[in-house]
Length: 174
Image 1 (tube, rainbow, N blue to C red):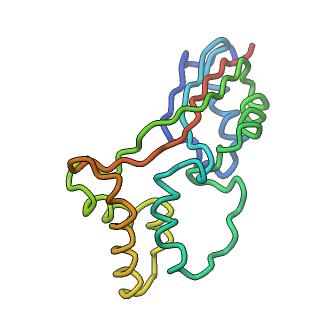
Image 2 (image 1 turned 90 degrees about the vertical axis):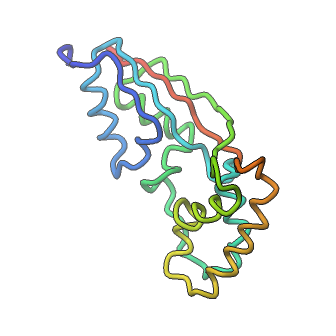
């Protein structure tokens, strides 16, 4: 393992999608030299992220009850549990693990205001996923509700909602 080629591995919101995070992080560790660093960001729990709760709160009652979510399933919030994340990193061979919260405004629309933010919310993220397969009638009501929910967050065409992430840093042992 001393022949690992990299001094630093960096990811911004890309490590939450592994079906086997223990194996994936072990592979990352195997490719970082001892003393090298891993730096990445990942989302904290959905409930702490206004970019999720605001759109979903506006449309949740329009949608059929979905299957219960699978804890730690690959997806945006798979690494949201700080203790689980620390365990994954330590099992992979990382030490000096720092997992720090960071809150920031998530830009939902940088121009186009509420109309652009609604289009985005209806296409991506949990609200977009929830609307897949919904009827035209549901889409029309969802669009109006999203407009009302997002309007208070529009500042001259810029729509932002709160985001909550982990800033993660760890050192490869050895």
